[in-house]
Image (cartoon, rainbow, N blue to C red; front, side, top):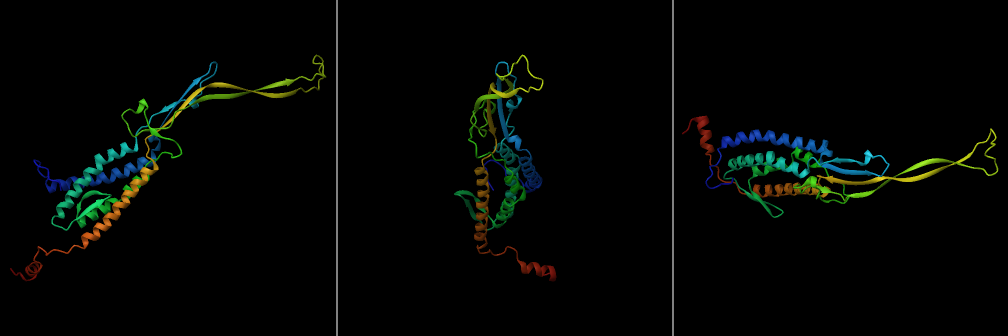
Length: 274
């Protein structure tokens, strides 16, 4: 537990009550966030399309539209961590630290990051957290953007102050359409003033390409890359391996003499010995 000078430590009964409530919030938040990632992929995508019709031409609705990225993976995870995950983990591990006071501990270091000095019970709690199905589902459902397109941090005015929005290059071009007319071919061997009733003229199709207008198109994304998602999964795997190794180490620590006089306890229960 962290001791802050000038700040009184929270009482155990208060922390227990907070952790009990926080556990339900933690579990439900993980579940809901995983469902949101899975069922709302469009919330992490945006697109801006414009069309300027040429003179005498109609607008093309299929080339017009503006959808703003509603949220991003990073924004959703930060909100989840700040409001649900971090408060619960702090309370839960404060309880574990109190219960494990005096127990053997081992340094818990992963990728050079010192995550604390944990007891066997704390390591078990951490293992249960890392293997939580809700956490696995959340990570599995994180939306990812296409690797087949070029993305860079967006400078679009719609996303000022949101560093985790990305955009594709802005496409520009002209839109064309083809008009088909039928042209009658005249036969020089037939008098057009005295055509026979059975005469069937020879025709051909004449196609003319005209410009309908100019368009622009650009995509935006608040999704993660596939690599970002894979790195989270890899880090959880590293943590699990570290938990296993740390548990082996702490379990190899010699046991201490019990503080309880077991013989006197049993003698009192069964014989009333002092």
